[in-house]
Length: 101
Length: 328
Ligand code: SF4
Ligand code: SF4
Image 1 (cartoon, each protein chain N blue to C red):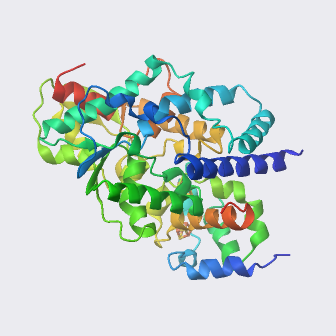
Image 2: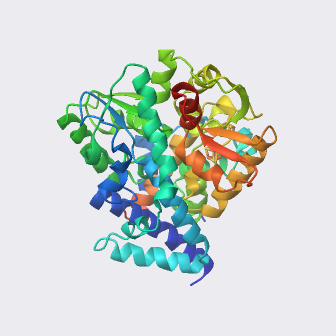
Image 3: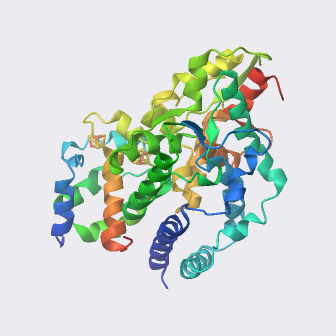
């Protein structure tokens, strides 16, 4: 069962640049990623939109594995700000999970 | 301790360590300030001024990171995790990273220091005489920003910006893509009123039409940095300069906007993965030739460590210095 975290949702809602909603799941990003991050950003962003905090915690290695190289972003047909979204998830984990303020 | 949890702890410890260093000592890898400024000795760079060269400590850190990586590689992952944990607790009291400095030989440092010296000499060819902030200059904080350490990064950026303002700096000339990006596009968002002009030395040189003394007339493979190419759009400038220097630039399949990352950005948390990415990129590059040019010290570091002995990796400043300054 997915545990919904309001803080996560609120944080994402406040961030006007977090545009994961635009993703239509075409898979271009995963096909190009030099780290082979098949999960990023498609599935992961969906968890965020659902407020699934536990899944984010479990997937933290994936979130921190992204090179922020923007190869995916440069080719995304929907203009999803993938690296910005990933940084946002990192800062959420750092602050709310690891308590590094 | 099971594997998953020690890995999780390792990540948290490294993040906390970086945050701590930034907060307490103004750098993610703090070393005494003379370590960062010794390259400038004898160059006669004036202190401060409206236009300053900003090294951001990146070239200076390359030999230190190389050494730390070599040492860490010797350790099993569990042991490495324990060390990171220990470092986290003693770090507030003893500056752990300062120890590594003693083991970086002058010879290992000299090539990187020479890059910075050459950049100054190249800038002087354009008629520009930049100042330098010496010990006042601080690491810009790119790694902390990228890792989502927003609190420590924001406080650090505010301090750095205040220093620049206090010194009357109006424009900074950067030497690496990470420092350029963070000053140009991130500081204005997190530091209210940050209005310092930021230019890469490659832009300054490319605009100036300097005369070549010793043209290369040889082929090199060029590796674009992701940050220059996809964050800053600095794609044509290095090519124009290299062509003016007589270099025949060979372009790998993934070049310009489609460049392939060197792996460097995940080095601090996932060194093995960083190495895999570097190897994949190296293969693309060496399918065209054995002499490679990079424009970012982090790319340089990462490609260098997976290099076959028959392959050479150069920093673009080395190639430009040879052609425009006429020195090998
Ligand atoms: S390329 Fe863009 S639209 Fe396609 S799956 Fe990735 S983020 Fe979604
Ligand atoms: S930015 Fe991250 S997800 Fe996108 S291609 Fe690079 S490593 Fe993969």
